[in-house]
Length: 340
Image 1 (cartoon, rainbow, N blue to C red):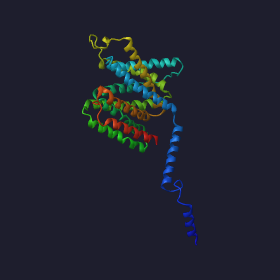
Image 2 (cartoon, rainbow, N blue to C red):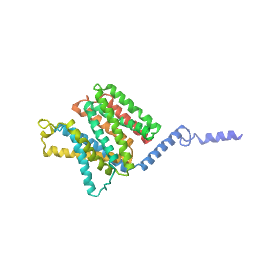
Image 3 (spheres, helix red, strand yellow):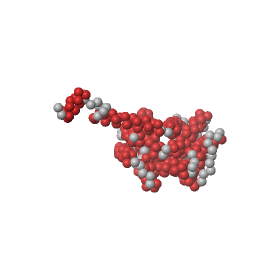
Image 4 (cartoon, rainbow, N blue to C red):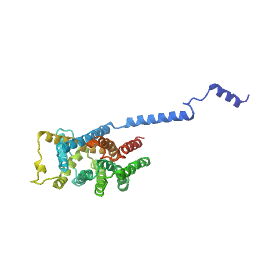
């Protein structure tokens, strides 16, 4: 019997090859172990401080929506621009309080770049409110996610910072989803669309610059926000009588609002939550990137859209049919690409 025949017999006696040692199943098992190992490495490398900042931003953002809605609908405090001004003032006062307790050290920063950031901050808030005023809640929320591809575009064109190819492909469902949503929104209008697009552009620059200034000026989030908050409040002051009712003899003006301990406490509560929102935005962007903050924003958008569809006046009129499903799918798709 030749050597080849003897080898064949030995192979038969040993039985079939183990799936762990060879074949397609062995490849699958190896791939599974590789994916698990990669996940463990990612978890080990994760910055849990950034994760905690993201959670503060997530819950405070949800809280500011709830408290603002309560203040405006139940207590009829319909002065959104004034409320924004109060939020910036509260943020500044609370930052001074935190600094007085020695939790962070204030730093002198140049007024030029910080004023530019404050201008975009004010513009971001103002255009966001106008977008919400002239669009449906659903279209307003969906247009906000276009900030992600806009940031990618601005960073590529102006700063030569390019996203990985697989992450660029992940942007496609975002853009397609916005087109789908716009085509099914019967309340779409030119004025609202202009405000929405302007809001996306200004918000993108605000987020990019907030991260760039922290690195360029060697300032942390609290130090930069100490300048941003009062300057934003200063810039928004001339707009108060434009967007809110400040007519002296008008019974619907802010001077006629019946302030009492309950609604005043709620206004202060919104200011406290706004402080957490404003600071956590800078913390997340400063410790990660504007793009990472936007992925977090996608999750918040899903929660807000689903909440609106379930609870707004007991109907789903404010949300177009494509929005909830699209929001969930694009978040999971883009987040999975970032994770891998």
